[in-house]
Image (tube, rainbow, N blue to C red; front, side, top):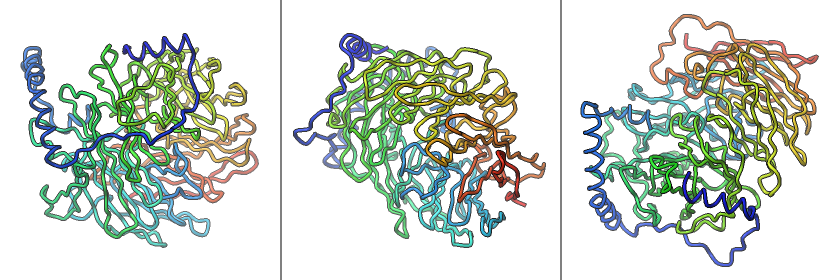
Length: 621
């Protein structure tokens, strides 16, 4: 536990949290940018010289402890490390901010991204039929070593987001879609980046016609650091690295007064691309900091929380939050301590505060790091007016000490005026532990933290209108516990499905369609009991379960089941592992669907149950 967080929590215990709104009397300073390319070059060269002795010492120690170790390949190093549509089918965190996913809607068509291909399925005339298929990469592109996992739609433009180990960056493919659901490739662009994969978060967002990315760029001070700076090129069959054009000049590169130690210098980059124009145009803003990160997108800004995780838990560990507006303003920052679990640890509230659940020993969200955190737990609540040039720190009064969850795989969620959190197994194997705690508190008040006992793990926390549901396993059974959020939190009902587990752990695997303030329908992919969460990467879901919420009483409507996939090969060329899942409940225009692999099944809700109406297999012939 860091000295700063320990001090903060000690003061909180003594004097209690301070939630008074700060009054801003003068414009706050922002982070300092470099004034010219020459100044940036000089700064990087001075930093390299200052760190050279540290580098030599680290190399010497590494050689003595592991003289036979072979260097990791670039791919292995990467693996280690518009207005929203009126009827959204994506379970997003922030209203009005769409998130990249594997199924979206365009008019009367579902557009589905799976295993390196795009598919369209028509819903016209209350029917269900396969229409079109196209590679998710452009002609002349070798998809080997590339993963195409996220998709967004702006107007008549489909945006496919991928990462290429071969080309070392983010690929953005643009496809036109017409009213008949036919697809045509418009162009492919490459953005320099390191791997952005996270087991919980998504790399892309869409606000109106603005496509927004967060991507880390790890700078090599002992090579050419400018070779890693934000840049973009349009793909041609014989495209070369020389065609990359910088999209973040020195005047859009920012820094704080924090010292950079070791080899973890990272340019945390937010890129905003305009999709309203025929040729995509992008601008980037970068902030220099340590490598560890968690990011969150509010309605107007991207927050990036950085921590040097090599020193997490030590007395010298220090974190920072960068607030980067995607309307082009200068970033601001604040010194903090600890680390969030994932993007759901954040809430930019309407009262002008940033609220963040933090732990003293978190690991960020790169790859599977969000699946394990430890240490003391606190709620950081700071006014946005406190963000400035990065010299100021959150005070002890901004932290509120909280009970720590017992396990490592923590789920957390802000639902209305409440913060809910607890631990489960998520990607691991369900256990038989019969006592689990759900912690609940009102984040804007200084009241008591409630601890509610559950007979199952906390593997998923989702909103049911103004209330919530906790999904988790115990042994081979799957549980849904409804949570009433009034003046206090309570557990009015629990539904148990025997011999079952979640088929998808990602947030987009769940969806709730409200029908009134107190009722609606829940959908979630399921599999047989006891299956570890990580099996979702290679095994599909057996069915999608539907429950009716009636004043927080959860009753089973039934399932739409998958047929066993045929043994024929789909000749997959790219993205042949479903890292981002392949099953979803879908609610559109009073119709109910279950997407499972290459099958789309429609159901009808009637007489207290659901029955299959029709299905289509849209996979490659």
